[in-house]
Length: 416
Picture (tube, rainbow, N blue to C red):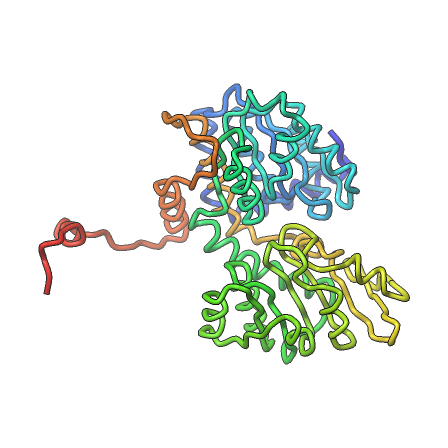
């Protein structure tokens, strides 16, 4: 175990209990797990953002009989009080400290791999990549894994395509009840929350540039627009760019958007989205942040190299002064602003994502089929069950097809 301070446990306990109140689907899964113990004798290594919602997921897995070790999937995403309550109140081996350096980050990954996992649970694929490069002797024990993010799924699919992935991964990120809700509504709200906490600036009337119009970009654009900002979208995909236009946003190349933006937020999962050359085009006072998984979308190192002065003005807000006197502001060191400067996604939407995590892990253990070592979708039945459970928790009923309607949808004979 390696956490900041055990005495923070009481604070983390209350905050985790508050999160759990908004996670009815995961609570129902936890009750079933307590009775059935699907993970009895199963060892798990989880590399996730250590937040209150993750705390609820860890309790769910251990209720199912799992032995779990947990580390952070990002150096700035750990909530130290949650790490403390998981360690003190639940006896979970946690290796996570907010602000840990790169060496500590990977030392923590190696520490949770010491559990010799049957199941890996990842957010960004750093755990899986470390296992496949530095801890290959453990691969024979692994039955499967789950992956939470778009970035991680891309990395794992690359491993599968190259034939180096040695066990099956369930792409939790690609479940409809994950990306259509968590990525859009969760990232949208929490990103704006992080920006406002870090800056206390008014969004209304500003020009807000969203780089990338996937599900996360849609969410950020929607929330920024709702706050009164004029949204500009940059894209490389013509279909997504057209969608942004049809949704009412201005679409520009990044070199043009750089000249007009007040706020910039990258959500692409790729490198070199905002380069130093783009920053040199920006107006004095431009604010840049990232809500993609890794801190590679904005060239912070390039900015640091040319800046004549840098100052931390507020928590998660760094000012860089250029030679001509203009100042550029970076939020959360270019890491996920929704976790570096805020608390991450609301519990109500993470309820869906982490229900997919829990049931995806159970599927890997119980599946009668020998899954191939590649990236697999969450079974449709699990996806739909989670949506139904969420609707039930909201006291919402929907219609059911009649036999005649089902027959009509399956038939080819009936026409005009």
